[in-house]
Image 1 (spheres, helix red, strand yellow):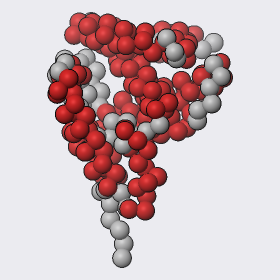
Image 2 (tube, rainbow, N blue to C red):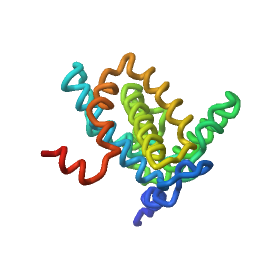
Image 3 (tube, helix red, strand yellow):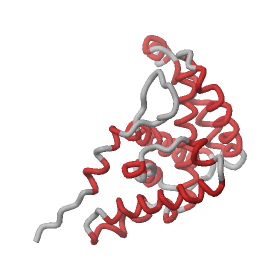
Image 4 (tube, one colour):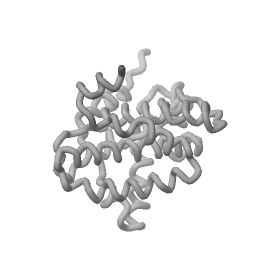
Length: 201
């Protein structure tokens, strides 16, 4: 008897789910784009940590966890950060909903595959070290998005950028790779293609 799974179908709907739903955006972003960016950033953070700061994590595992870090949103859609975190009671309930959604996604896999995916999909089961790296990458991605929107004159993202800068400062205290990353890569994320080409030579 052939086993049928809806898992991939849910993942393939990620491009339909918009981020920043309560905010005016000059450039729309969906959770598939965001997850890919977070995966690239997480991979880079771990490579930097391992190369310069005596780390020993697996960059590919960090990238894989990052690819799936928003899987609950395939069921719940994107929830605005301020809405989610301004009230501790609401935050607790949102977290419960997110875990239920993650478990639904996990259980949509063939049973024999679920234990392989549990520490990738269910955030409470993700190794804390990798979870912290992915969180830092998630914040960097959002920070770069806010900076990009501001560069196009979108004032809605001023407070977002300030909030994210404060959160990233807290990560820099014990993750020097975050500061290294921003110093190395941030500036060129906001220049033209012509300028990028010039600076590559």
